Length: 220
Length: 220
Image (cartoon, rainbow over all chains, first blue to last red; front, side, top):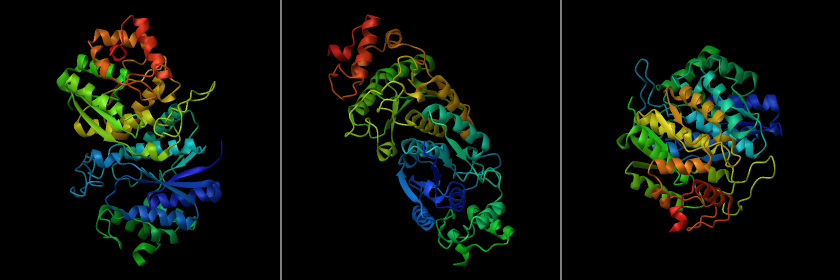
């Protein structure tokens, strides 16, 4: 079994930070990235992921998943549905049921084929958007399921799990990943420069502000 | 929450038996089927699934999954790889890592959207082909993962889990599903009438023989 690590890279701030975390921990030559083209409305995310991987000097594989768009019913793949926050106690309509579970299962399948055992994902339960598939207990349960289902001792690393956005920005700084943030994409509206208004932009801006670091994406 | 049940229907003998099991248990009007087009070499499976669902009088949805073919490396989606049984202690090359995990996760996503809580799958650990994602403990772990990840009290039913092929045939007889077996597909070689030589055909023939029932697919 190789000691390679596979990072699920979306092209966003969190997964980019995770990519640099993995390089720091496992060494650049032992890190690969996988990016999923799941029919996201904002195709710019895919281009961002490519640029981030290239900038970091790691091999990146893009895998298609056409199922979520076929399922429909969420604002991330369906252009006719506007992004809306959930009412109290309800999930927001950006929730794509099973999205992270599927991403991590396919990442594990890819890792299985390539003899890799470490998988890194940027999910976080702090500041999270109400997504139950980002919580620690979900990831731990999935980890057991993947081990049983594929007979591999996978380890799912979640370096951001308990970090606030501020702490994630500080971690990125420590890892030398702030410059790479200019290549990332966060805005739910798909705008570049970012809209600054959507929940994702607001959360990102808050993190950089609290960390006292200027966001190179906004500064551009 | 509706009391609907969703059957993962591949068009094979086992999932067809499960469809009739679900109809018997939940009532025809409360049962739906979902079939995955994951790029299987033998497209006849999809046509069989359609015919089985139509014959049973239940709504069927076909969902695409283009990811396994992109991953490659197995004989079920890659026409250039011949079906081969695994050496002792090894998985056969028909093993698609994560296949059942992904199927059930997408089935749960579809059920989530439609307010259904019961999912039925034909996996079996008896007479199974060495697939770790068909075992009871894997399915139980996945069930926990899906509940946590989607915040729904899913129940995954595995009526064939501990049945031999003989017992599955007897169950199909009890449920009035033997006639429907003429519409199913089992052969790994994709032949119709079946080749009778591949491991899947041999297993099926053994089950019917031991049950003392003639297989309407072979009799055709």
